[in-house]
Image (tube, rainbow, N blue to C red; front, top):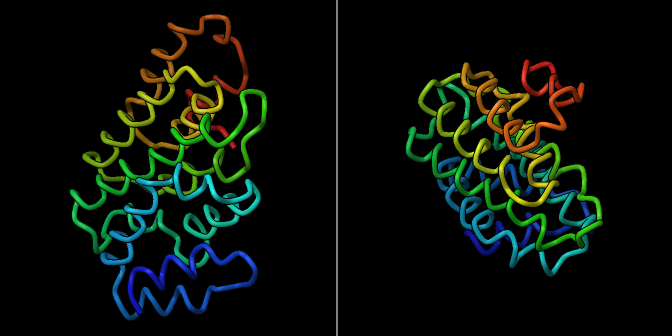
Length: 193
């Protein structure tokens, strides 16, 4: 069982596949599974474009939550190197940037797209990795699509990094009308839910 089989189970939304995905992790190891996931996430537009939005949501929750808990690989003490963790963050960015391509202009995104960065980065404590995540989310907060901005801002609100407030302040320079928005303030001070 290799990468193709892993993808088949990952995208199998007709039934629970937790046991099969756990078996891939045990058999191949997390670094290999993360390499496969990086390829999948890097090509998220193409892969997700063939699925219903509900199925996209289910697969993203599978990746970010049980059984794969991809965010655990971004924690301090992970078996991934800093470079591998950075590659994971850069691949994860493709999911958020896919939003305008997968959802119509006025169509709301599914919950996993909103929660994506919370699922991945809430436990990031490494200053080096935190800086990469900060830059990634800050850049996406300036994207023209409001849903991409919203997802990135929510992620910033969960990132425990001293540069978070400055990243939100930069966003507010482009959107001064939102300076008193309570949700934006929560993102800025790290109390967002």
